[in-house]
Length: 513
Image (cartoon, rainbow, N blue to C red; front, side, top):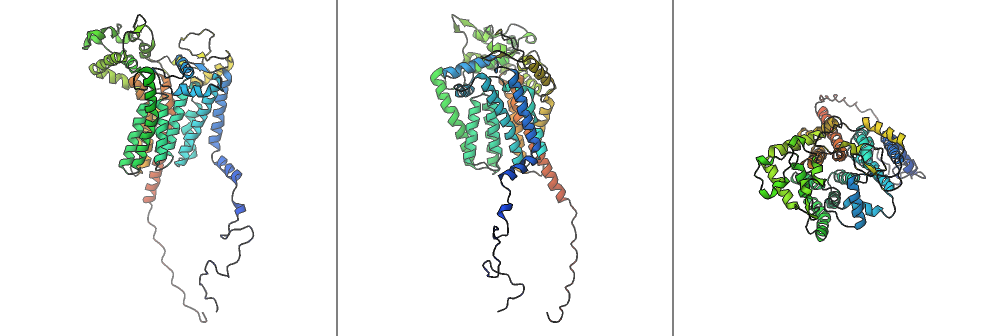
């Protein structure tokens, strides 16, 4: 039987030629597939600019490490180190960073702790860039978004301190990347994000505000049906699995179920800069807490918290005069009696973070703490950090280079403010998917919370703005990506309709066919 012209052969037709040696049935030669080396080379070519930035960021951190013989030391550093040695939570700050030090202590010196923190800084640069690439952001925009994380001089400085900021930033970055890298995070991912958010809260208590922001984001996604309820529950369970056992442990040591027991002091420091007791109904027993100087002549709020001559730290026979509850009561009276002054201070200090320059006001924590120092052998805290325990030494020329670098290479406040507005503005953009609106807004709100939280409960300090470098530039990058996609869809929708050509008539069949 002859084969009918045009008939299709079955897959097992004997007329099909056998595949050539080394080829698949589809005709593809497996040897032609790029190997791991070729794929890595292709990725390196595509992301060469980022790899260059990452290498230079590593060089910058190496320069800081070479300039000092050990890590840098702030007054808080001693508390972290002492609690790492005693394996007990401090009353005034959570134990997360002390746990980090205790984990590293058997195998590291303070200098090596600083090196580990610099490595975490580089990891943050890579994680943020990875997130932006997975979300379809152009490589060059992704590079722009990580430049502050890579080269901001104040961030390079803070990574060299025995302080909680670097660990806090790394945990926050990991949680954000894990939450946003997938379109619909499942229960396991959301639970892991909850654990990370709990851990960062045990590193700095401002994490409690961030947990609230992420919880609202998840609830919104649940309401718009882009997330399952199991993910929201898993997130809350993850947070509780970290914070509740810690609160129980804190209770066995300090007698109260909490993460810290210094809230009264912090709130007192917040209101002591503006409270005017003569205009308020302050109980007579709390009158000694009223500052004596006029508001415009008072010391910064952090001095009301920590200095021994502060009314909040009065003692009689070695016993504190004021309990945390009494200090919180005084602060509550001040806030209720002068809500305008409290809100004015909250707003002004939040805006202060996005103003040009590094200008210090009379109520600010001394910005000299965060300038690369020329350390002294004399152990005195005069707005200049010390060197951590270890061999004393520094290279004066290299420190001079770092100070010159710091004068110019930091993230301008107005740029952070612009990133904040662009990220929040994604909520108002039309013709965009819900994810393209919600995710930039989440990052922007996290950045705003990182600035407003300390302004509401503590005093102004430039180090509190540094964690926003991990969320505000990426917020703007994701928002701009969404705008570009929406614009592309809009242009495609406005293209003129093309009239298809008329079909040609079929030729008449010839004889013999």
